[in-house]
Length: 89
Image (cartoon, rainbow, N blue to C red):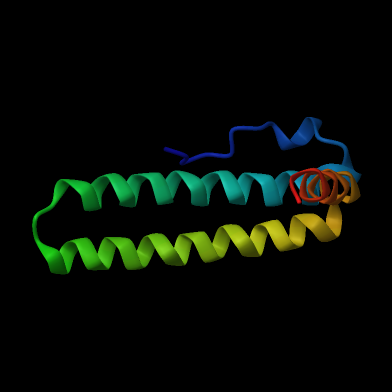
């Protein structure tokens, strides 16, 4: 699990900091989603399972929020998403 920033931000170019922060946010939220889903699968208590899955959904919303900002600050990422969508579509 993520408890520290796994990147030395001192060596990241100033113009790339915001992109890196959004990616790190996404990584942390994905880690949380994985943890809560694993925990939900271990319990037989439906109330606890429900709480864990509700929190999982909130983390997914956070991922989407970070991704929306990443698309604003990283034109290359936006380009790749567009290319993928067109290829898939």
